[in-house]
Length: 311
Image (cartoon, rainbow, N blue to C red; front, top):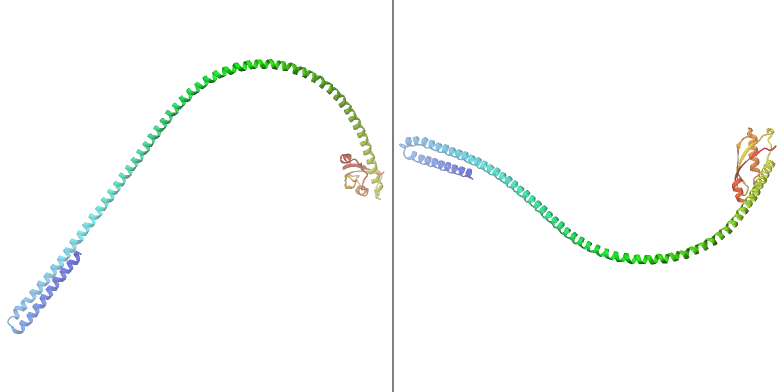
């Protein structure tokens, strides 16, 4: 704003000087036509006026530069003052912030201490109340114990009398029970004696039955084995290359019907042709004659071995 005022003042001065010069020139021209004697004077005045105008312009320019310099210095000083003020405000704000934080921390510590104090007072109160309650409970327990002791003494006396009476009744009942037990034991002994005799007879009979069954099974095994060997021998076709005295052991697996499931040489004769002919003879003889007793078949003939010696 100040800079614009300086330029405006400078423009007005320049305009006034220019107007003055033009007016002087106009007057000088008029005077030159009418009065030639004044021409010399006017010619002398014109350089002086021009010089004065130039001096005024130079002063105006210097004043403008001075004002501009002062304005810049003032602006620079204002800027420095503003900067210093801002720095001071920032420092003050930081100081206030630190003071605020410190105050908040102090308040927080105060609250924590106050809470601890209240908690401690509450715990002390609770302990005191608990102690008083325990004392009341202990007094009540002592009174109750005393009452219980009196009741227990009375109950013990009643139980003692009742026990004596019960012992007497139990002794009488025990005597009757002993008599009943003796009678029962005698009857049981007679019964056990009869049962022992009956069991001995049963064992004897079972032994006789087992012996008879064993003899029967042995006979059935021998009979079936001989029948199997005969039937296999009948189905055997003697190989041309077979020598006399050859024998092999065959393992046979049968169904309950006597049908052959498998026949395998487990001990060969040394002649593979003879061994194969023996296997074929077993397969051709299927079904083999086996005992009708399922248990005996499962024990002895489901899987069995026999020596094949046709001669």
